[in-house]
Length: 163
Image 1 (cartoon, helix red, strand yellow):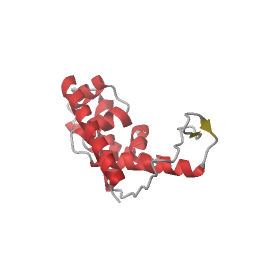
Image 2 (cartoon, helix red, strand yellow):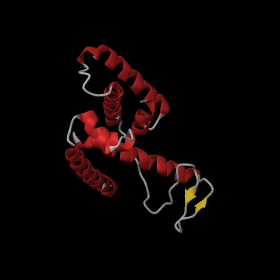
Image 3 (cartoon, rainbow, N blue to C red):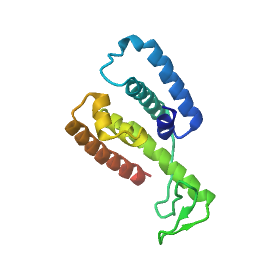
Image 4 (tube, rainbow, N blue to C red):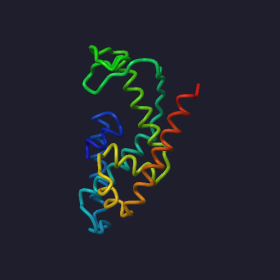
């Protein structure tokens, strides 16, 4: 749960706070659990929703130059020719800002698209797991994921074009 929240919120401390809040809410709402699916899935869904709400409350401003090279997850910089050089702090900051703008754009997605995108990419659930957790048919999950990604792309393009 902490890892899923961390992918949404971007920081370990915030993720731990969101996971703790999820446990408290789950404990208080335990009588509402219908036992029609895995308990862990129910708990993870609560945590993801809390993390998305926390991310939506944030107001981050990210200025990213699309012509600047990006940093890969291990800290080396991707050059224009596809090779990797040593870590560049400026590029790392730009990648972090870009990651924050993506999380912010995901938080602005309307339901059910936000939930499906978060479960797929932040919580790393398979499409079958998402269908089972949300109680939706697999075809519906696929459609909502596709539409959510299209809306996310439009949102990111608009935010990059905004002055």
